Image 1 (cartoon, rainbow, N blue to C red):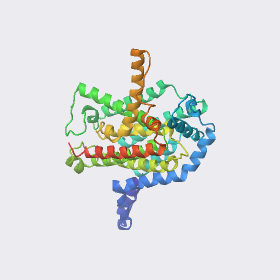
Image 2 (cartoon, rainbow, N blue to C red):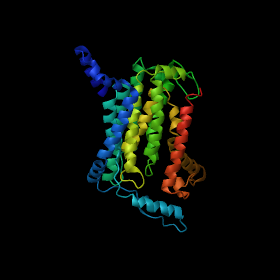
Image 3 (cartoon, rainbow, N blue to C red):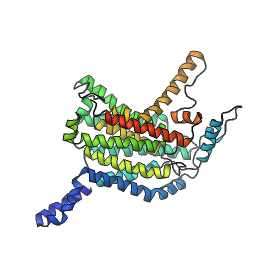
Image 4 (cartoon, rainbow, N blue to C red):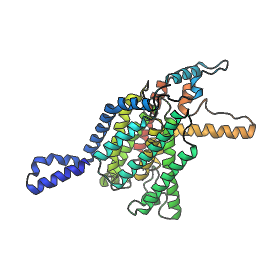
Length: 394
């Protein structure tokens, strides 16, 4: 919006002969300037609105739901001290409002639309994020008003898959961006491993749907400790900020043998706004948390990562950049299916981890909450560096 406004003023000034007086407005044509503006705006809005939003969330859901297993210290004899410490920590979280993701999504969307140049890539990402945030808010609200009974699993899966199908259909029908589906790219390779064809299109469509579905659920599972999901999201956002900028520039994308995606630079503004929102929310979500993002934030942020990975033609880069999220969802999947498999084979289900996802397992090993979060941050930074290095090693 600010870009269009600045250009409008410059056009009027040029026609009337006083263009030099407002020549400074040309700075808004630079993506870097608008990205900085988007980040600062989102952060400032978060800080300004944070306390009011937290109080509002407490008012609409005064009885915050806490699972039964988190309310009671295990009664088994010989229970580990680590387990008891975890339970005590969980009790202290009772009463902290959820659904804080509405703050993240709200300020991020306002900032991105204000500073960005509206194009199909930006609008597609923003609208998808709003849909997933709405799904998450519905799920969170049911939990706090129905004693933990969230939305049925088929509803969440159905909305996520439908969103993926809509994204696939839109990209496939738009000839200018259909190559994002028809050509399958992987890290460390210059050329597509699969090119135009029916099989390639089917594989590409499957990858798009999996990216949106898997990423949104991965961030959702990571949201279990104070500051963990939002901090890792901030790290991952920085990676996508760099990638979107590179793929949106003809010169840089050609130098690095990346696919040039016209208009992708506006996703840089989106990433900057998301980063500012994450940083602002972390102010209230760091230990001890005053608010949780809930499914409202985690589904939306995760879905945004998946969509951006598709739109910059690097869907598999998310597996590297979001390595912590992959570890979290992988540990949950392993735990669940290993338990089912051993129960079928032996009659007794066995577990790989003390508790899934991974961050709860680490707590049961005796790590404090802040140790788990900080060390996963460190891993997140390492994964982020590896993701950026993969752009050069091709």
